Image (cartoon, rainbow, N blue to C red; front, side, top):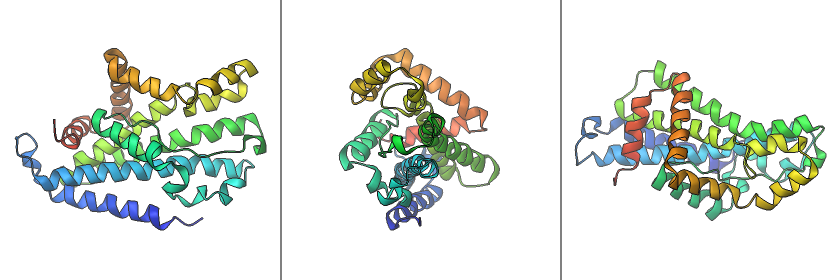
Amino acid sequence: MRPSPVFLGILALTAAGGVMAAFGDINTIFVRDRDPLLIAGVVIFVAAGWVASLSLHEFGHAMVAYRGGDYSVAHKGYLTLDVRKYTDPVLSIILPLVFLIIGGIPLPGGAVWINRGALRSRGTSSWVSLAGPLSNLAVGAAVALVVALVPMSGGLVIAMSYLALLQIVTFILNILPIPGLDGWGAIEPYLPPRAREIGAQVRPWAPIILFAILWFVQPANAALWKGSYALFGAFGGYVDGAQIGFSVFQFWK
């Protein structure tokens, strides 16, 4: 169960983006001609870091499933942290990254196929679903704590703060009890058969409809970000830094 070279490469790319952000000129964030090194560093750090967190999210599902009785996840390669094992390249990486870039909303991307019948109990099945978003919450809290406690350059502060905020947003989105999201998976074992059937029918479309609502319905979008900033702040997150990181990440606006 060693990390795959792909995952290690993504971590290396994230680190490279962090170095670039650290050496970027933070004094240019409020001027028209921002430092290209700062912009490139923030974009690379956040995008690569988000893909790494996607791997950790899916690994969380798989590890709890493995410990809960579904040993097939090991044969499927889910315990290697190789993002290619969890995803369809277009639907799971490219499209979510596009949504992240244009809207700042980290649409859930990866997927692991769990043999729910092999799991020991309904409670185990619920924890399998919860393990993914809880990993995002843990990563977000950890990164926010590092920013709060470790002295670092301003460019790295805004990059890490924005990535930490995205982890919190991802947690909140995934924990919603909507078919296709992990919140639904957590309650599904306890639902009556008819409700599970309806959930299975709408599962392919429900997350896309949710994204459309968040994109076009301003009160829904505002509620998501208000809740995310509140939870982010509760973990000691640097809210102003995350907002600046967001603006640098969307450098074309």
